[in-house]
Amino acid sequence: MRDTRESRLLLVLLVAIAFALITVDIRGGEQSPLDGARQAAASAFGPVESGVARIVDPVGNAVGAVRDAGERHTRISRLEHENAALKAKLGSSDRNRSRAAQLDKMLKTAGQGQYGIKGAQVIAIGAAQGFSWTVTIDAGTRDGIARDMTVLNGDGLVGRVTTVGANTATVLLANDPDFTVGTRMEKTNEIGFGNGQGGRSLRVELLNGRAPIKRGDRLVTFGSSADKPFVPGVPVGQVVKVEPSNGDLTRTLQVRPYVAFSQLDIVGVVVLPPREDPRDTVLPPKPAKPKPTPTVTVTATPSASASPRS
Image (cartoon, rainbow, N blue to C red; front, side, top):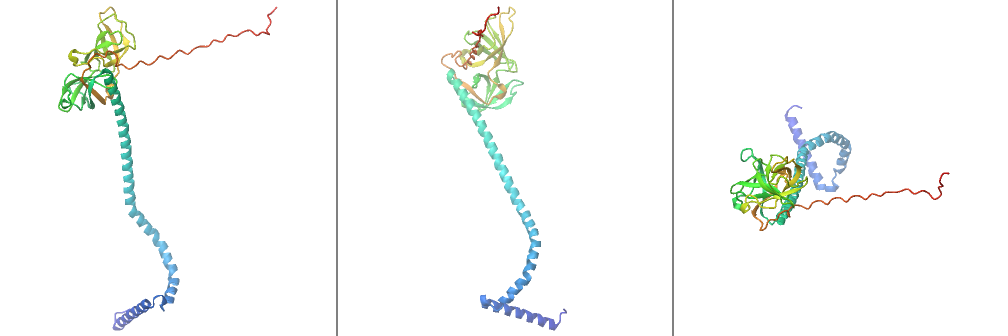
């Protein structure tokens, strides 16, 4: 349609008619004279609207899914973080239970030997001094730790303190080649000197070359003058091999330590020695020997009805 004076007048007339119809419809309310026309229009154009809606809805749903994807990703990430935190908490609980068990065992050992100890945690393993077998603990002079104090755990002798700082200390482990400790055999009280070998065994030289020693015998610390660096009675290990004496003045033993030096965590530094030498009372009870199973012998007896051969 061309933009002429007549077309403009027609457009103004149509707009005026539309406003008039809207006014009549609003004032009529539910009794509006246009209600019938509205229902007829709904019947005519309803199917068309439904068809258009079926076409448009999948597109709208897709757009909504894309919009909600970010929210789902955020929720999944949050759940994953919560699960990870829960697993970490469970792992921490297991570790705490393990440490509690170690502490209980160490306190029991200290109680049996009447040792006054200061608990500490191993915070570093390595060569603090050259290539020595050492660990660093989180206790120092502020905790009453001093040089040449005995270090133990629930299993037995760990080592001795060599250097001390305000909050940390270095412990030379009993398996270090430069480590030497006086030992005493269980029951027989045979005295010797143990040296570390850098592994899972100690080499012990007994002063009595004719001492009756067998595999399975156990040793404790002999103790030092003024209880430094070693207090008496701390479990050392168990004999695994007795080397031939060959007429030597000393007797050489291979001893497996009670302490697993590669698994150290909770340890105790002896800050107060026992009043009396506990000797071998700190050693754990030996396992009971299994009782031999009685054997039953069944002897067959001849039947009464059997007759001897003629």
